[in-house]
Structures are given as structure tokens and as C-alpha cells.
Length: 375
Image (cartoon, rainbow, N blue to C red):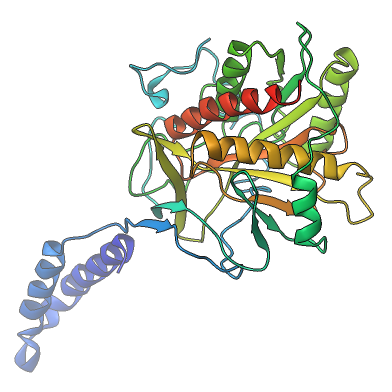
């Protein structure tokens, strides 16, 4: 029985006692005492919130549907009424923003459903296949696995140059997507896990990626434009306008990465897909590479898939277990704009800010290594 149900049952029992006690006489004179003892028994129950550590490192069939893309998790129409990000000493949730925007990150939390910590491992089934150099693909299309395997062995046709010009664009279609403050047993059912605070949303993850790419000498543009607040509808159209305008200004850009966070959940459970890298917890990552079904005007989608395969293998070679399989599916996600366009889900809303920032750092390092192969 959940904590909330126990509280409701306890309250009902006590209210029942108060109502019936004055009338309990004769053969009913012991009811109040019985019910009182039952209420006291309810007070002594050790209430536990579900906490589960799962590890899917065995074989998992394609029937196990754990991939729930964050195409609007927490979305609701909202009104306007509603530096360095990381420090080794200060947890991210304690960093105070100079300008949190119209929708600040919460400072107080209500208790809602349960958070289940889990680690996704190797998958088995007809839709999954292994990449030669590490990582997996989840093929949800009619394109054969053999065709995709052959494509995954090829490099994309764009080249990275030794130049000061920007060659990578980081942006966020769902800019306000955010995370849990820290590891705990419950999530706040009253919060839709969206905030305009750049120190707490996916811009924070983009900053971590940007820092690593620039450290490797790769020019980066990081757009912090908010595309999903106060209106969520039309976010992809607005982000496409942003990307096209930036590429028009900087035609040297070859790679466009749309950084999101996922939403893996049920009505009462939020999952926290994590792994441990060098003694620290990191949010697991999923790359999405779109396939054209003939209606999306993406004739070069296989070029994106080649880049996704290169990046997936690089991440897994650098930090085994950090990725979930590439999702290859009939998705558009503005991936017609460049031949190096991908959507990357960094964790889920059940993951923490610090787990996801750390994943951004690891991801940035691996992107830099993958791009080195394209020089």
C-alpha cells in the first residue's frame, strides 16, 4: 500500500471513530476500542516508498518498451505569471541563478510518485543489433538491419577542418526541460519538470558539452534560445528558424545537436537511468537518428545515421554503459538541416542535475574524439 493510501485510510478510520463513538453502546460498545487500536496500529506501520535498483544487463527482448520520448512530458499551456554552471564543491541544485526567468526552479518540493533507479544494458531481439565498434541500434523501421549495419561502417561525408570558425551547433528545442535536484525516493507530482532557469534546464547540459568541445579546439555555437515557453506547441518550427539563421550566419557549421532530456515513466513511477563512471553517477544517454518514410524531405538521413553510429561507438568505447541503443525511427526532428543533425536525450526527468551535467561532460569529450576522425 502506498504512503498516500495509508494516510487516507488512517484519516478515514479516525474520522469514523469520532463519528461512531458517541453512539457506541450495548453490543457496539467495544467498536470504538477496536477501531482505536486499529488506528494506533496504522500509526505504527513502517511506511516505505518504493525504491528499486534494477540492472538490465541481461538479454531484453524488443517487446520491452522502455523508450518513451519526451515529446511533451510535463507540457501545459503556461502564462508569464507562472557563468559557470558546475562547481566541484557546490551541487548544481544549490547554485542560485542571477536570472531564473519567468518559471523558476522549485525551492520546495511536494511528495509524489516513486523514483526507480535503473541501468539499461544490452538488448536482444529482432529490432536490436550491435555496432561493430561498440553500442547498439534499435531499428524501428522497415529498413533492414543488414542495410543499417553496412551504413554504420561508413563515415558521414562532411569533414571537420582545422579552423577557428564554428563547426558544431548545440541547441535545445525543448529548452526548459529539467531534472530532479538530487537522488531521492520520490518525485514532485505538482511540478512539470520545466524551468526557464538556465542553471537548471538542458542549457546546463549544453554548457558542459560546449566546454569540452572548446577545450579540444573545436569551434562551437551554443544557442540558449527558449523555444518551448510559454507555448510548447510549435517548438520544432521555432528551433528550426533558430538553427537556419545561425547556419546562414556561420556556414562552417557541420554538426547540429539538439540536446533534450527524456521522460521514462508511468503514472506513478519516474525512472532514473544511470550508470557509474569513474566513481560518479551519470545519466544514461540515447541518440535519436531519424528515418524518412518518404514524407519528411530528408533524403540524406543515412548520413545522420552514419554520424550517430560513429558517435555511439565512441561513447561506448570511452565509457561503457553510458548509452542506451540509438533509436532509428521515423522521426523528423529538424534533421534535414545538416548531414550531422542528431537529437540526444541526456537522462530522463527522474535523473538528477548533477548526473546529467556529468553526462554532458562525458558526451562532450566523446563528440570531440569522434569529430577528430572526420578531419
